[in-house]
Length: 362
Image (cartoon, rainbow, N blue to C red; front, side):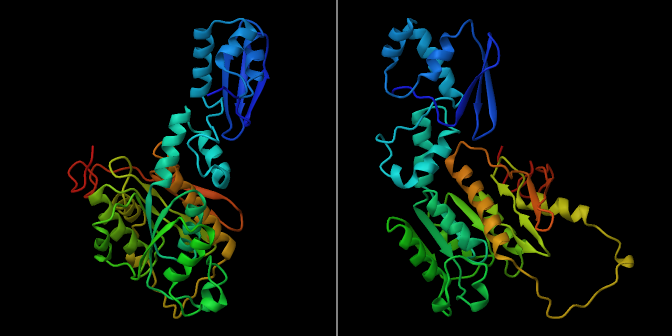
C-alpha cells in the first residue's frame, strides 16, 4: 500500500535531533532521533498518493532504509493502515469503527484480522433490560453480525424511561422480539438468535451446540451475584470470555469485570475476596426490615454503563486490544461523576481458576 501519515498523528520537531509523533486518539508519544530534516520532510509528505519507490527517488534515500523507517512507523501506529477500497466491503457504514481499530493495529493485515474477528463473532447477551438492550445495539453498530438475545420478559411501561428500543406500542410484547426488530431496522444482515427464557443454573446448556465468543451478563434475577456465578461457571468450563455487565443502584453504577479464562481473576476470585473484605461482626449489626424497597433508576446512567460494556466487548472480540477491566471493577458516582476502581487479583486458592481449581488454565 502507498504510505500515508495517519490523520490522527501530529508531527512535532522538538529540536534539531528529536522528532516527536503524537498519536492524538490514544494519547501516546513516539520520539525518534534524526540527523537532519530529511525524515521530517518525508513523513509530512506521506499522503498515500506515491509509492515507496517514488518517495525514495524524490528524497534521494535508499529503498531498504526507507522501507525500514516506514515499517517502524507503521508498527507504532503512525501510518494509516486503512485501505478503504481493499478488504473493507462495509467501509462506508463502519468507517469510524475501522479507523478506531486502526489506531491499535501494526499493519493493514493486522487491522483486517481484528475487523474480521469482530464481524465473525457471536455474542450472547443475557438480560435485555436497562443495560442489555443498549449493549445489543452498541455491538451491532460496532460491526458484530451475530447476536444471541436471551430474556423471557415482556415490555412493561416502567421499562420505557431507561431501556433501548421499546415504545408504548410494544408493551406486552416479548423483549427479544422487539429488540430483534430494532436491530434489523439498523441492518438486515445481522443474524439474531432468540431464546425466550430467563437465566437459571441450567439455562445456558441450550447453547452447547452453538459457538459463542463472548457472554455478557446483564441479568439481575434473582440477583446479579447468582447470575454472575451461573454464567461464570458455564463460561469457565468452556473457555469463553465473559463480562459482568454492570447496573444501577443507590446513585452508584457498577462497572463490571471482564473475565478471560486462564488469564484473569474469575467470578469466584471476586466473590471470595469480597466476602473476606465484607466480613462483619453480626453481634454489632441491627437487622433492618424494609418492605417494598424500590431503587431509583436513571436512563442516562444505564446507557453510559452499557457503552462501557460495549467498548470492553469490542476489545475482547478484536483479539488484540487488551480489555481495561481485567482483574478490576468500578463504581461510577452519578453525583460526583467520579469512577473508583478496585483491583481483585486471581487467587491461587480459587476453587475455579486456582492451581488446583476445576477450571484451571495455565
